Length: 376
Length: 210
Image (cartoon, rainbow over all chains, first blue to last red; front, side, top):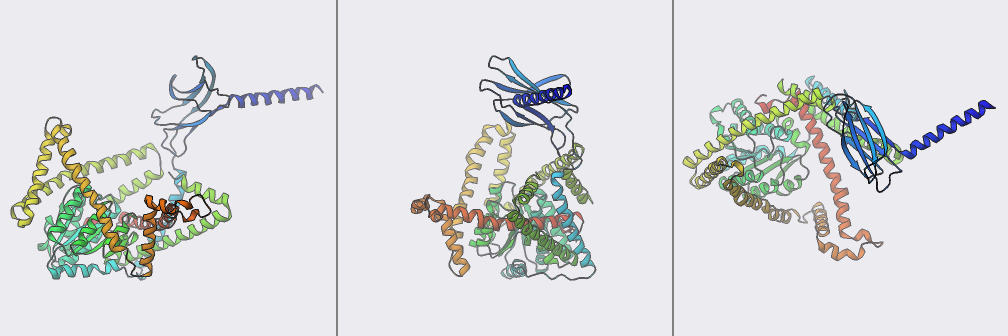
């Protein structure tokens, strides 16, 4: 009987102490997962906070403390970032009355912010990359074994010969605009690759090529590409460095320069292949007004409608990246293109499965959305 | 080799948040910026020499514009080297009263070019072109106060679906967004494939190789 009474008293005491803690509030400090080790997440919930009271949070490190945040919210979260010094951090939450006295104090920690070896948030990206990489390399190996991969006709690329031939017959130059971004943009690289193919044809047909660029590094890269194309075509004498010349880094300054070239030199063929922004329509309309045949290509969805409306042929998105394989017809390039198509099929299947799961099983759908939203 | 090495480091840095890896990534990005800065001098000299050559020996109709380029380039540089640097009154004047109005003028051409491109593109020559024309008309009406004035009576009633701004929003957020996302996905895959080809050395033509 005494034992039973003692047990009841003990349980009641534990219950009341827990209740007291809950009515006092909670304050937690946790290391932020999958970061470079300089952040701690703080969270508090103080149901008993009065209107006249303010809460202050202090960071305690190496015996010293400093206030990091002051708030009147009953509950909230705060990320303490840029903790560059290695060591253990503690936090103290103080509820301060109007007169400056401390009504309550809750501690959290110690926490040692650490860097993860691998960001699990991005595991899904790594998995997708590995699958895509495998598919592309698999089909490149298949193409090297002699398997042929047919490619559908892309009207814009079929017309490259027609455009260059037209310019040659009319005795007018060919203008090539590789976009306004630098060489670190893959669209610019794709544009330069196509420039190499166009330069081979202009070398063979003895047509004049003019390539005004917006970035100096693009100028250097484009020069090497065009020079190599002219060398391979057996026309090194026809190449001169000023075919590829720098105008300006400024967006509308570049557009003005290119428009001026179009208006004065009246090229018969204009290629606009790369990254474009607001200047796309200005370039395309000016080219249209001089009666040039225009072949454009970009992966910027916002600029595609302008090119489609104003240009004769447009390479849409991935067609820009497929152009090098299409024009060169090298087996390993076609193999890579096939691998890219298989990766697209894989993603389409995942999309359909994900959509069906989301519709039929909402919790599964919510989990899928959560996984893709937290990649960061 | 250099391309592959740097690309692998950038990819590893994306997945491994350790500060030791981030430092290497940040250093590589800084090196890129330094190289780009030096190549700007190259571009500047190229612009000057090409413009000088064309100003002296180019076509007669081009010479005036090349002289304007040379004078503007050297004048702006001189203003920047004055006491106060880019905060000098002369540089400020060039920026505020020459550069900004000129940029705004070129940008404003876009409004007229949109009108002329739309006039050419939105013609009912086929079924698809007619659908495009009707859709464009609905979107344009939904974006201006006229659309609200004409169909405002339907707002908040059982015929709310006839309210033009609502139809416009649905077209932009559902149909247009679907198309844009499809293009983006295809382009993203193309980007990954091109990146893989560059990293593996299959694509070397941008460096002057095969």
